[in-house]
Length: 201
Image (cartoon, rainbow, N blue to C red; front, side, top):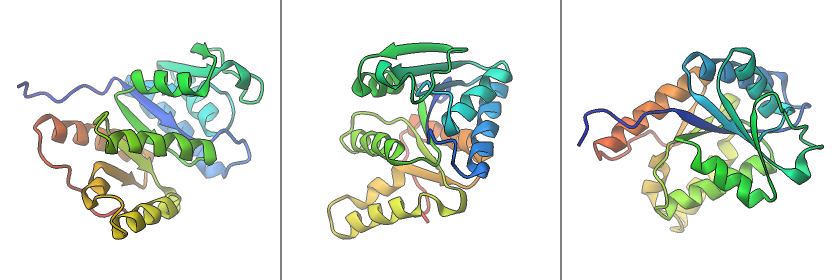
């Protein structure tokens, strides 16, 4: 077995597509895009030019980074396809999510709405079923994701989810912590040690 953990070449970002989002969230998405470009980690995302996802992609592009967008044809107008980067246009949401999953080594979950929630719940379900072991890291400014974490803890308390499942996710309060946390998770998994983390708070 190699002493080196799997590389972190591409990160899929799930996040909101609303320009009306809190400006602090939009700025954080841009800051994360600049971090990805600086560390030569490719952004994989939904292909749009609006909201947090647009802010992140535009920041990557402006900083000379690598990016791949995946956009369903029926959303080209509402999510305003950002065609200055490599983009794959698909027919369905299912194709979009599968391609994003296949092209990513890890997943960053930034603030978002029902679409972001749908994507990350499916991703967590696949993890629960043993279909992948890719890192999932939530950017949780001001406790944004706490209601979701509380629901997850509730399902554990009701014996519907095993307690160990809470240990496969991470929550961070700054975008600067996302990539180091992902790399730490990859390293832990490479040596087959248990993923140990504080309870999501």
